[in-house]
Image (cartoon, rainbow, N blue to C red; front, side, top):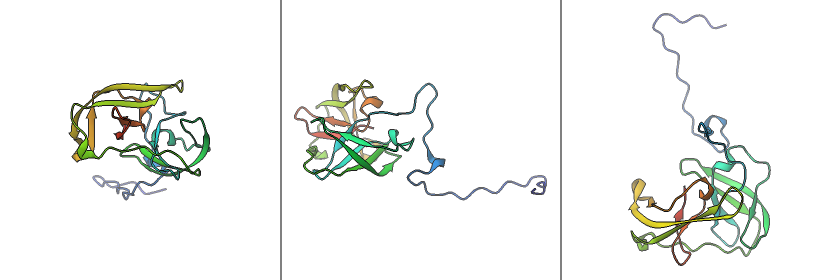
Length: 172
């Protein structure tokens, strides 16, 4: 046993460590009244060779199997390449060629007042689309848009798109 501390001595502070993917000490706790995600989430295909960005919330429980189902109904196994917990995003890799990547709108071409559609999946796996407008640009140190389209965990990781289907950004 350690000897008792003398009056007034403080416990030494543990060394700060850099959070790493899968670091148990950095898991996001479930908020009271909310369940942790365990099921489908929404994502965006970034490239034809299988890179997909999605919500990080489903990867807190370290799933043993990760699959990606595309709009054509094909389901393919995926690998988790990394998680950005601050942004709430994860990067997946699907070993499949010929995927249809999203088209992203250049940030300088995004107009406040433009129609915006938050796309995702409802809990029952049906498509979920909410609409609104881009209500502000350059939020969070110039890295985010603001919309009044209703967003929720069902479309986190999914796209915020314009009338032509071009992606303004990823919903977090």
